Length: 165
Figure 1 (cartoon, one colour):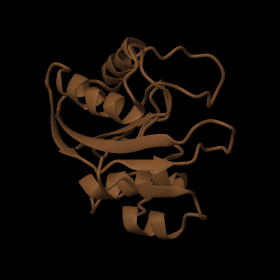
Figure 2 (cartoon, one colour; figure 1 turned 30 degrees about the vertical axis):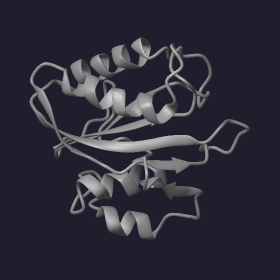
Figure 3 (cartoon, one colour; figure 1 turned 45 degrees about the horizontal axis):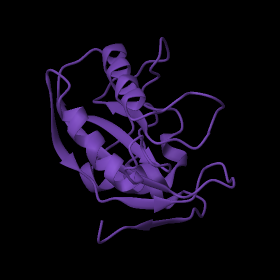
Figure 4 (tube, helix red, strand yellow; figure 1 turned 60 degrees about the vertical axis):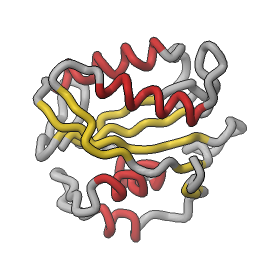
């Protein structure tokens, strides 16, 4: 399964809220030729990592089935981000949409981009908690760590599930 993290903490062009943008992004991912969304996590609200004065993020993970080259998927996701109004300025800047490939099955790759699995996925509750929703038995193909063990080893991070989202 292909796992894609979704996040947003600014309104999208046109005024959509971060949660609306995240839901919109699921539909845009589903429209990528050759792919189909098979699972969508609950939505979570998390503090920015690293800490900053930014508004909180809405985060989730989608599980996708299908065949696509990693570079082609990265390009498609970056096009969706641009469509949402993302402008790449400085690292970790607030954004209307952030899409990251967390993993593509058992693929391990160091170059070219995207690096797989995502090199910081195991450090981030905002990736691991929603990932567990869609792939509770996921094991990082690089480290061998199971998602539950990775969550248990996380330092404290501000995150809460949005039950009514």
